[in-house]
Image: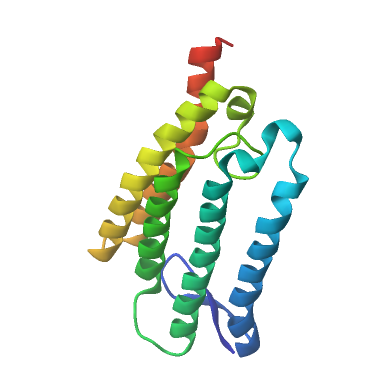
Length: 183
């Protein structure tokens, strides 16, 4: 049995077979590739992904890359490498957030990527503003999370900050909708 999940304290809390640890990551990446191909073909006409096809491809590639990097980190840990898993995960997630934020301002309204709330889907203006705000927040917030994890700030703090950064655009979309759509 090898570790397959780590708790908030950075210690393994679930174990599985070496075969599961070895194959789960590649299967998840292959699934992302299938989704990348399938989702644009399933989209309703007014929310077509091809309005931001390059950005869609880049974001889906970055999600697959995140899965691949996390897979390598997990394989290293299961092979006995000694490093703080909680810090490694927060550095990876912070950098992912930064790279994702770099693309967010280019995402056009669709059902599959971006901040998809009732308020962003109902208004092109709210969608655009929400994504511009999210782009800056995720870019700089991701850098902060990665830096804090690197210098050893506890996981609970960096994870809480990461979740606030990732979820703030949902609340922001509601505020923008109320402001610009007056409802």
